[in-house]
Length: 279
Image (tube, rainbow, N blue to C red; front, top):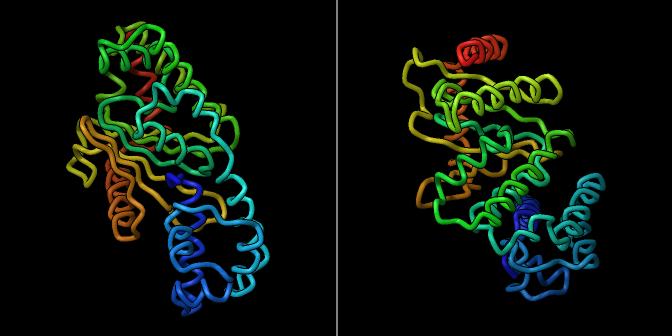
């Protein structure tokens, strides 16, 4: 099967416990009664794991009961179709991957130098971004993309913590015109007030930082102590990083850019100043 974010997370966690036990994939497969090739696919997220096999794996690896409950929940979710699959005919693989990453996240940290992040965009602002990037898209598909983006934002009312760091250019460039930007900035202040959202602005006067010229999303899930993935999207390509060394480099980048950003209260003050300039 095509690996999903959930199946890869489950496989990665099982692989970590296997390595900690000192067992090889072959040894473990023999003890739980499956082929080594099947176990290899489970660890890579390319094969489903049945409840019975998961139970035997938990027993052999002495996985704590609390963690076993989390793994079983993840196993069930890995089989569930995501709501975003209703949009499969218009979704690129990159956008589908990002939505899968967001679906179970407990904390998202994102850096955007020039635009407001998608989770904070108003419909009018998002429409201008989408139409500018895809000028030949059908009007009906644009409407569905906008609907999709608005549905993604529901995660903010479901307990998702969001830390969004943006360049000053993002809050000043009049995408859609002054009225659209003004409403976009008002929307940011409302979201910060109503949800677990922090916005920090990197002013034009800031020095160089490790995220300069880049944009990325760091995803962290509940009950998992380390961020498990970094999503990086560009004009022509996208990547999901899951290796510890790469993730650490992006953690350094987000710390570097935050050291140059205004504090949350000062950032909101700047946003209010821009709103006044747009009157």
